Length: 300
Image 1 (cartoon, helix red, strand yellow):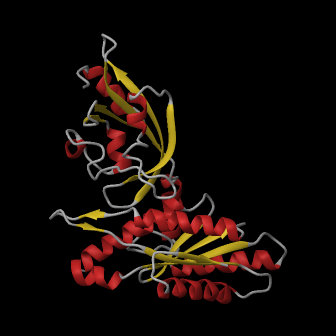
Image 2 (cartoon, rainbow, N blue to C red; image 1 turned 135 degrees about the vertical axis):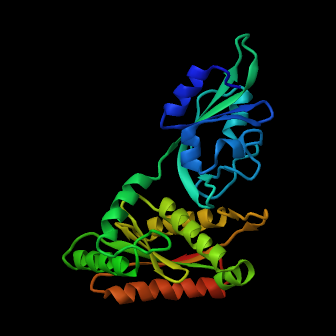
Image 3 (cartoon, rainbow, N blue to C red; image 1 turned 90 degrees about the horizontal axis):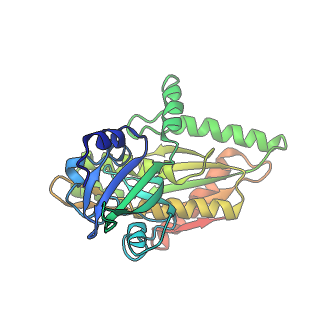
């Protein structure tokens, strides 16, 4: 769709992801920032439809938008200035929060030829990576996933409890465990299991709020610390994390897809409660989720 070399160079230089689709939603152009944000190279996507198991935008509840809710379809049907905050699917499996804007594309004769989507990464990934770089110096990162490790989680939990004891703000804690993770290792091997852990870690990191802490607690279990969260806010974070994990997947070299779900237990800290007890309450609710069928959230 883009034949002008100067225009192509200009679009390749912008920080936003940009791609064009024709009237059948087949991708005809994919810029360098689209590659960076999504992980998909230009040669992997051009010629395919945007819904062909690639970006597969979902909203924060996990609802897919590639059907009648697709922004590209909306602008090609006459709507204007479509903007939305969605989560796209990264090549590595995890979900990335982006702000998208869709525009109709007309040729020089004012004939509709397709649509353009511009998307901006809103995951604060660079800020997270900068923080993790500092944590590495103190051995506070998990080598496999890149998130904070158990020691880092403990330090932040102790700090939040101390703040609450001194009359500061409260906080919530989530325990998150990948369902049937042993079956992933048994079926696909430990190398794929490691990729699933990294996928789950970054979907989780991208689902929490600014200022929340996501860390690997051990094995296939993660923890989220949510300063200032009451039960309602904690339940919202937990459900968003559950939905993003359910809508993440890895595509293996042989074409097989690997998907997992998570169970989530959460507790809002009580004044005078030791750190271990806050975590234990969340853990008990996590295992109630497991007993109730998995892929669910319980918060108190």
